[in-house]
Length: 110
Length: 116
Image (spheres, rainbow over the protein chains, first blue to last red):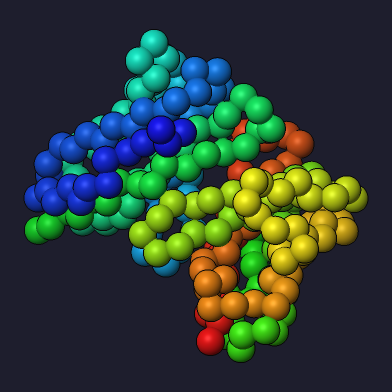
């Protein structure tokens, strides 16, 4: 089983749509969770951290369910510029290393 | 703030040659730097973790004699791909972390290596 699993997509949505991505992780002792965004042939950029209480940043909402070892990202009012690959990232307990999911591709179309 | 640069941004080399990639933290001191590799349509895979002044810790399956890492200062780490082969062609990305941000890593723009 992969340490971090994501639906690869692609998710093709119209502008203005709401879209949700899910991610599961295998290590119950994982400490920190993040969503990164990666554009084609570029480095990943931190989108937001994910907290147990859930957190929101503008059109983006992240949720964490430790019992189910599940993380989600909700994007409201999708923009064309949201088209990218979204990476679920987990900081494992050991060694402070980040483990990346394979990413979910989002394509927003006009 | 928190800018990480990499050089070169892309490189083409012949099989059997060695290539050095530099990773620099421009506006902060990086106590730890990480080297990742990303093949097309795959996720980033951690290759090694390096702490300034000490030997790098390599992930399982990564040959330390082939991928030489030097972290000689708090702002510079280098990755040398020795005796490169076409299967080493990949996107190499470094990231850096300061002591103040134990979980947040700042990524460089990546180096695209093509071995012919």
